[in-house]
Image (cartoon, rainbow, N blue to C red; front, side):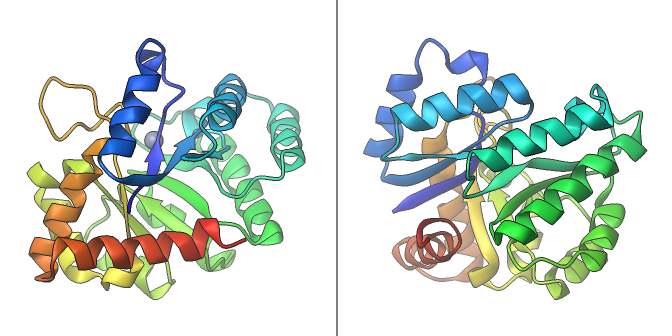
Length: 249
Ligand SMILES: [Zn+2]
């Protein structure tokens, strides 16, 4: 009963072997993959993939912060209208990116709109907050929503504590096997607030290989080790958290 709450199955690197990737994920025990769109074309492709593999893949529609920068406010509004018309069960990837961002005002405009939509529809939202963790938390403080998932959160200890106080969930990437920051994050947060993800095809736990949803096994291994509980128990708790957020609707 493994879950990958953040992958990009629409990425062109999966074009040739997606059926095999899905098959391997099922064999590894995956029960849910949330595939995230990052712009209009990516959202369309994500919807198609989710339709084809509907027993495993749930589409998450969004607008990546850097992609939002290329759009006018009107185009952002139109994309949000399009997404709302698809009756989404989860939103993302959205958020703020201070590392590669050039127009933070535009990013923030899109992010706030998505957050309002998630709140209105009462659905989870998967948030990217690279080098903008402080700002993201400030906005979350203002627009409080109880179904926020911070994906690959790289904020420091005090920001982790702040996010925890705001009730955020933390999605732990498979690269935890070689990243002490995420190991620390897991040790700080109650297991009932943790989820697992790969961010496939990037952030592979294995150097020089593309990442795949089956690698969430790495997350379970590390979370169970840090929390000192069995992998079976870890899987069960995380599955129940995911079920509560994404499946019971
Ligand atoms: Zn991503």
